[in-house]
Image 1 (tube, one colour):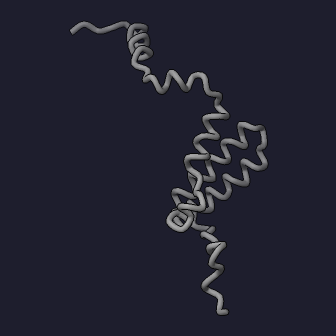
Image 2: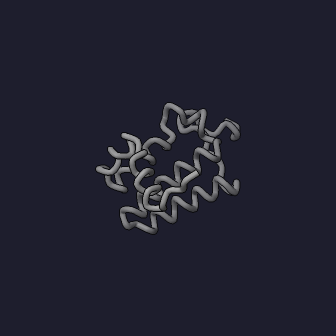
Image 3: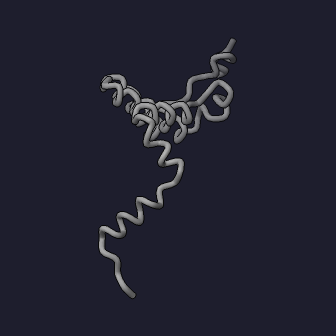
Length: 107
């Protein structure tokens, strides 16, 4: 079995790039991060289902932090990273539904 030189492997791997990857070359890193943050955001439509999903909430906050880092706003990025960490280490929990109020308090 013959072996290929390293430069041939590199050339071969660059030819395997998917059409989607090629299209993404024209999109800025900030735009990619913003699209990821939008994809991972918990919207009003899925808030009830995902409000306590720690992984989803952490992903959402981490993606937003990346956007702020790319916009050169480290303070905001840090705040979102702290939120992401809080979801993972269970130091924060979901707030009550804004349309239903806090059901734990008596009326």
